Length: 298
Ligand code: GTP
Ligand code: NA
Ligand code: MG
Image (cartoon, rainbow, N blue to C red; front, side):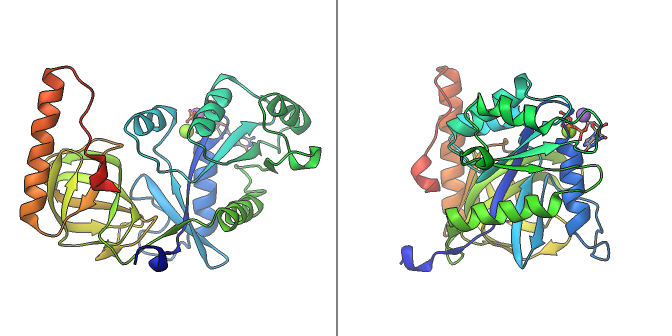
């Protein structure tokens, strides 16, 4: 049954923080540290998410959900993040979007790890960052609280290993689990229309295993998974829990935050997809909120 089939899955991590505090630099730095250059695709990231391996354990990083995407996804009831890394520049301190990020993470009940960035700078003042964050309820362990703070320099790569270690630690405590032996469900990270390939969607598999050929309902559209490409640009046939993967084969372009579910056969997928599209159209007409058949995605 469902309970006994649960297995450990990688943590899904998003990075948030004020503008220019180093979110993108940190994502690049982690990828450079952990993805071996010899791999196919090298360090060129193919989709808006990637996985690294540390001490034999995988961690999934999403780089698309900035604050706006986070809000959109939450508005649709999608919970995709397990852990938020809050990046705060040590020379700048807590700024408006830092506070916004804290509020998002708190509302979503997602644990926060603070990365105090730009420690290489002369003007770095980590004590001030700790003081300011304490005022917002993030009290460092060193001061008797339970928030993990990791000093880093994203640009130099300092503290990256410690940060990954802390992510694994939180993952161990929280025990994120999923059942790889069931039909896949998950959330759309991003999607667009490609001239050659048609509808292209990056999905995060949250439970089950997605396979090439699966009949699938995605938001208000449907199809059959034609091809899958992983974060290194490699063709894959399956994608397990917490794996980001790019798929083709959908009839239409879904939206970020849309949920997806694999159904037993293509006929059901078509019926559900068309019904959802109809309902969405009606809802739009009557200016009601977006229709959800959320029990489908449980
Ligand atoms: P937005 O996406 O625009 O919000 O910015 P961001 O948070 O992604 O910041 P980004 O990574 O673009 O970094 C902003 C600037 O800070 C760039 O010039 C980086 O080179 C610099 N920077 C990032 N990390 C560090 C660091 O550890 N040390 C120093 N000295 N500079 C850094
Ligand atoms: Na920037
Ligand atoms: Mg950026």
